[in-house]
Length: 265
Image 1 (spheres, rainbow, N blue to C red):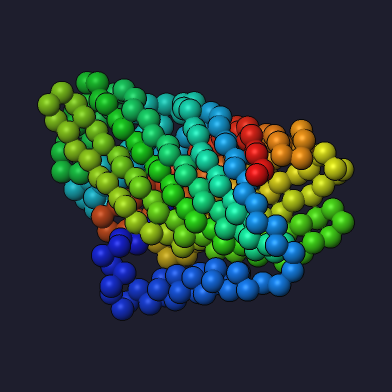
Image 2 (cartoon, one colour):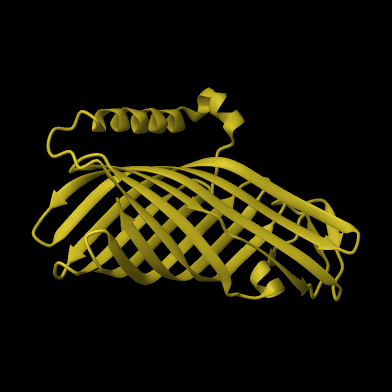
């Protein structure tokens, strides 16, 4: 969502992006100098569950030569299987680094009700179309604990996201596609509320909006500590956003029901 291609990072017009990246690196380096308790442990979280697409509108290119159509109307809402893996390093009592691997893709069949022009090709109505949608997300987050109360804990930070996206259509021997590999800077917010030693609530958001697009990935979950090392949580996740630029128009809204299994080393 409003990604920045790697080749464009050399352009001085993207100084704000370079400043954000430099600030991210500066804070990460200074995390190791944070005084206080050194925990030095890792938390691995496996999240899985079904995902539905409530909106997925596409126009490529984003001009009169491209047709705006809905992947929801073409192939349906789902559900589709989703999986993501988190690895969090608790550097010390206030600083965390978190790696996220979140692949997501589907290939489904459908038919258009009218001719559709997509990425240089025109697809006929009434004939079967194979539609492939990929939205992989690879992220590294640094966060700092700003509040530690009796029941509430709050973190703020920055996320560096690599978006690996692709939309492809195929009808008989006709095929066209649009790929997108880019960098997206995001702000991060996390909150935890503990009812007791076992039960807790979790709120976690990566988001940024402005210019030609926006990106929001947020979840609310309730969790239970099974032991000192194992815990489980379940809840709702939503991803919403997209870009409205010269070459691409794509806005999607995805909704998940998720289960998390967490293990702390």
